[in-house]
Length: 313
Image (cartoon, rainbow, N blue to C red):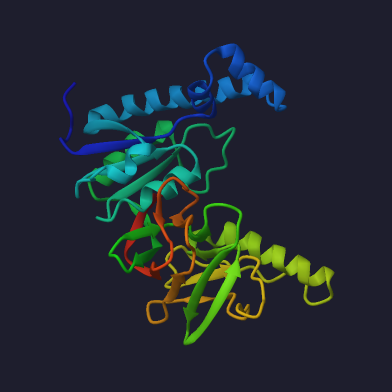
């Protein structure tokens, strides 16, 4: 088959639920027992797996005429080097799109494809498999609609950096208290808490929303606030981030006034770890892709200098 271009089209995939279980257990019977014992249905797992893999095959076939297609599992993202002319397609759930976007620091366009519209709503998956060939053709020709996505950047004092599309978590890998100094807007405190979340505009309807509503419900039930707060919904390209401290504990040494605030380029968030071990900083819920954040580590969190590019209708 003659290709219309020689540009590379990278298709990001992820393992299904049953793929993960197959790695853990030795037989189909053991997988079935595990799923059924926990109240699940093996048939649902199998149907999800079948539809997803059929969608990948149809997507690959649709893209073959347009360029050199390469399938890439998301576990290889941290070490994969994207070329400046690559077109990237993520087929999976919204989390795969967010996880992919932070590695496209060259502004490569990213298409989100919904492999199973009957199962996934797909806020970041605007395209169906059968539409992608035509859309990729438009992308290759430079005629496509897109939305810019602001990302957050955390820089450590040893030079390491990590980006976030939805949010950062800074705290303990375990359920023990995280201890650190936090500084923003000229205010500095020592904290003992369950960690700090920093959210982007894209992530403002996720973890940040749940934290705000949980805090409001507690305040209301104890007579200190309203039950339903005003939502914090930022545009995807907002030039600001918001941080929230989870469960801050006041004591003789620790304070809990600086627990929520806005982060901008002119007003970064600074955190210095006081944790002897198990301190981590990770993004977008991917705990396996983290930076160690133990005593002596200092993080400066602000808006990333580059934005992600999501192809839209």
